[in-house]
Image (cartoon, rainbow, N blue to C red; front, side, top):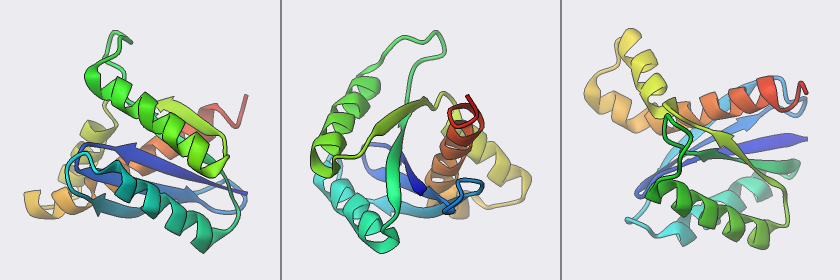
Length: 141
């Protein structure tokens, strides 16, 4: 069964997915939507669930501050988690995403991506890093 990961922002959402054996994580999309129009993100999640058919868990980046306290964005993600659970009846696992977008940006700089090209892929890479953290920590418990 596959896991679908989301790195949710106010205007973009990165998506990544595992293979059926939950060994590899692959970035799917850097999805753009009108600011705070999260119903569009729900539609995109539905698209992936229908496309892959064997997704059994959603993994959502949980943006805690470096001292593990919550921010306004943390609360937004927690509210979105409830929406996903109600809409899809799948478990939604929150994974600390502290610095995942920064780490993705650093990787893309190291491989020579221009600022414009980084903008188009950093959120899906962040979602992939979040999913890799999930696979390495949560599934190996």
